[in-house]
Length: 363
Image (cartoon, rainbow, N blue to C red; front, side, top):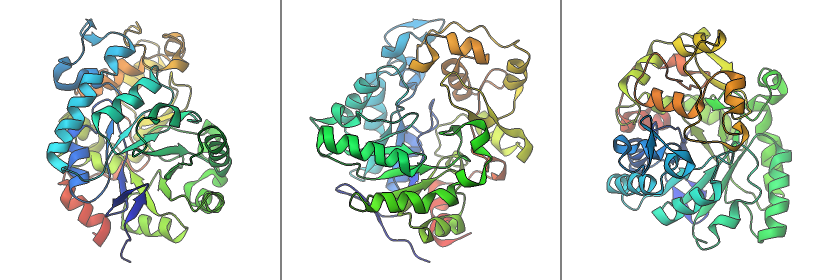
């Protein structure tokens, strides 16, 4: 089975593979730029850009961490990441992932548009007001991440009524993805909420709004998985964890080694200050969190609104901004290493070019 290109707004993605946005610093210029160069859609993560190039774009630091959302989500850092990604991919379509749950969401969306990305992807909540922040950038395509046909219907109704526009595509993320889930703990294990059972209803709902392209995500690993999603009606797939196993991925080598060394039972759901279950690798940190003996929680970066300035972080036992940035730096003691449920299947580090060939032509 050969794959058709993926249309997102005015942009054509030659190979219908979207690389998932992964922060802090897992998908920045190196990975996103190369994926776009190789015909997929590279996605820059906007999370933690104050850490880029050893925090040179963060105006204020406390304990060597970016102070508050203005520095954690550094406008200058994001601009430089996009600029460097463009040096790799040229004019090929390039996207930015901006989580809806973050503090300064609207500002970061606008920052991404100003930086010159073509597509904004948003999950971690229902982005019902997303178009508000791109009004001056009508050429930028908007792609919400959803977990059900009902969520798509709500977004389409509100966008059409308020902004007279619809999503240019939608990412349907099932409960096997890395990081935060759009489901409860119980739902993550229930058959009716598995990706393969969600695609058709979402494709049917998308047809009611002009056949919005549906991009399937969460547990997609190889060419046969992509084919299965296409047969259900998806126009493309999003894959995050598999791209960590590439030379160009911006993650620290220790991050890649954590995944290469993980077994199936090491990847688990955990609580998160964001308010959603999250999936990652069981490491030294998760043991400390279980016994409430982890590092102190000081909420320096004030990264996500649901955390309520560290209140939820203290409830679950860790600061997500600090622990994800530690993983980016390769800290095996305190780092939080997110992974999709298939992360244990990573067994080698290859180039993005080789991975894209495997995904489109087979192993």
